[in-house]
Each structure stands twice: as structure tokens, then as C-alpha cells.
Image 1: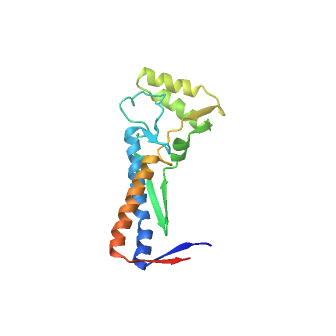
Image 2 (image 1 turned 45 degrees about the horizontal axis):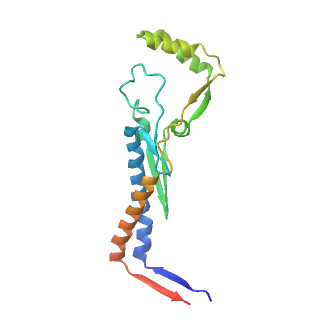
Image 3 (image 1 turned 60 degrees about the vertical axis):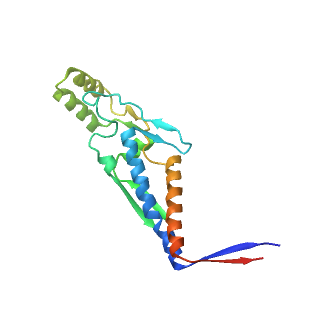
Length: 182
């Protein structure tokens, strides 16, 4: 014999399930933004992964990684639908930093490197950009992976608590009908 339980939700409970996605998306954005201050990301196993230090440190020694203008930290947005929330970072270079990238040097970049070398005030700054400008078109530059968003164990735990809190709040307001078939 097969036994099954059917849970019939009233309209209030259905609405509560739909409303849970917005707080989860906002909670995710706050969690991802805090990673910029910590210069790290806590992965799905709960391990904290510190971001690789930058190679070029002239003028940036006291500034946190990935925070030159703060644009990427502010570029989060979200969309919600019935039971789904999608969090996105709209900075065009965010994917390169989040996943890491190998990029080929272009003519335009070489011109930029030369301009930076010519306009540098400090000696060590000028040396760095001169070395960069000596590279060839097609040479590669590796951007290390500095993940700031993705699957995260602490975030999943926060989401579980939020879902339970919202559902408990709404079950007090709503009626749940259970029907058992045997």
C-alpha cells in the first residue's frame, strides 16, 4: 500500500512562499558585499578563501583588493519570481574577477601601459608600467580568481533561518489544511 500526505495551503501561505525570495536576495547581496571588506569568500564547505594579493601595489598598499572605485561592490541587483531569486553583479568586469581569467594583451592596452609609464611620477610606478609596455600583443595576463559571490555555507544557513522565521510568522496568520490518503 502507498501512503501519501497532501498539504493544502491557503492563499496566505502561498503568498508567504512567494514573498520569501525578496528577503533572501537582499540577504545574499549584504553577505556578498561584506566579503569585499574581509577580502575573502566563504565557500559551500564553510572554508574561508582569502583573495590573492595584488602584484601592482604602488599607491594601493592601504586600499582593500577589488575596491578602487567601489563600483563592483555597489553593482549588485536582484530579480524575484514565484519561488526564485536571481542575484547579479552588473559591473562588466565582475565575472573576470569572480571566476578568474586569462586575457590576451591588445594594442589598446599596450598604448595604455606606455601612457602610464610616461605619466608616472614615482620611479617604482614607472618601472612597473614600462615592464608592462614591453610585452607583445597576444601575450597573456592572468587575473586570479577572487570569488565574491557563489555557493556559501554561512549564507545557506542564514537563508534557512530567514525562511523558517517568515514561514512561522505567516503560519500564525494562515490556516494549513492537511489531508492524509492511505
